[in-house]
Image (cartoon, rainbow, N blue to C red; front, side, top):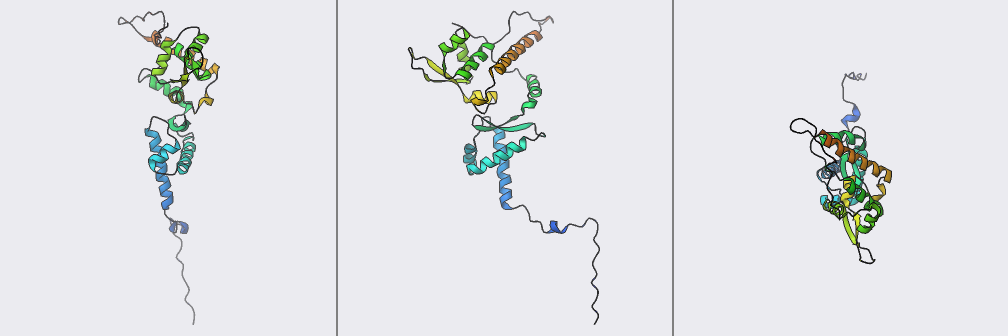
Amino acid sequence: MKQPEVQFAPETEGAIPEELLHASPLSASDSADAHLKALVEAVIYITDEPLSADQIAIALGQPAEKVGRVLEELTAEYNQPEHGLTVREIAGGYKMSTKPEHHEAIRAFVKNLKPALKLSLAALETLALIAYKQPITAPEVMDVRGVQGAGVLKTLLDRKLIATSGRKQVVGKPILYKTTKEFLVQFGLKDLTELPTLKEFEELSRLAVADSDSEIQSVQQPDGAAAQTSEPEAEAEPSE
């Protein structure tokens, strides 16, 4: 008896590939990892202070090692050129911020929104001395700068850029000063090993003075005449 011929239907355009028909959906494990990654990203975004992997792990109830891997993935992902933000390790924790290559544009934009919070030249000089020589006493700072700066130290203490670090075991036991975690955050440093060179710090000082001068020159009197002033309206630092 003759066997009937088997007829195969021709492939139609747009047919679903065989491998897709049998593709497995996203596994529960992959879904959980994606959810954790999203949570870690959100946590870093909403917090002002840098958070360590341990802090995030405790808050989310996840293993620190797993959170560490997620942070590495996020860091690599945000390092791609299409992102304007970056995830960086700063002051022992992770923080989301703008990328360095965009700082000038962002700085100009922010200056149009509100007055920048600046340090005077005296404050920058004192902060630089403390950062590079810490722990250091007020008399030691005075010896280098040639002037007393109790007011400058108070300004830096008020802004939490420096803190006391005990007393030096010499006659009079003067107070020692050191930089703080807030100092690292404000300057975008992972730790003190990332401090700029003294030359770069001097350039920051010159930029601060130039900004103050340009702002004063732009101030206009009510009648439209330029305001006359003999010195920049830098932060007043009392001297003793």
